[in-house]
Image (spheres, rainbow, N blue to C red):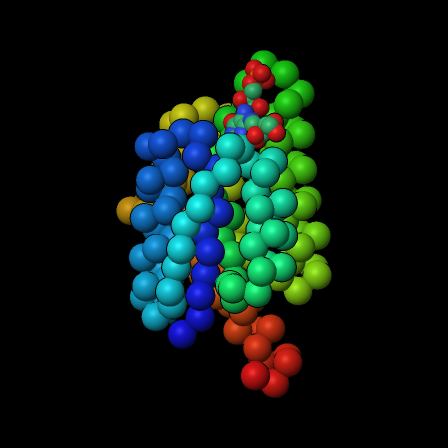
Length: 141
Ligand SMILES: Nc1c(NC[C@H](O)[C@H](O)[C@H](O)CO)[nH]c(=O)[nH]c1=O
Ligand SMILES: CC(=O)[C@@H](O)COP(=O)(O)O
């Protein structure tokens, strides 16, 4: 059993509830413990994971959030830089699954957040589980 932390940017409650539900179901199915914390937006997720990882209290992380395109370039920043920050941590050995939806509208978000549809929350959790398995295998644990 491992301990995972879900770090969610709770920008859209309805979609986040669906994403968290899917991630929790995947982690429970694999027999892992899970805690959840909230941050203001997707840009804060990589920093929150970095801080939590330094604590040594968690084995893996699931990043969840919803970024919906608005009128300005800010979408590219929020979507791209949150992903870049997560990948930088992953490349540094932190098992993270990225379930931050980056979509054009709410209809696209709903289909991807719903565990009965594309289940991107569950998908991100399974990715984090797999990365932790690889980390443990490569380190001989
Ligand atoms: N527009 C969305 C944001 N924007 C907020 C940023 O993520 C960040 O919190 C702010 O720039 C302060 O640093 N965040 C989302 O998660 N989703 C959005 O659609
Ligand atoms: C993804 C965003 O940051 C977006 O929701 C902000 O909307 P806008 O670009 O219209 O300010």
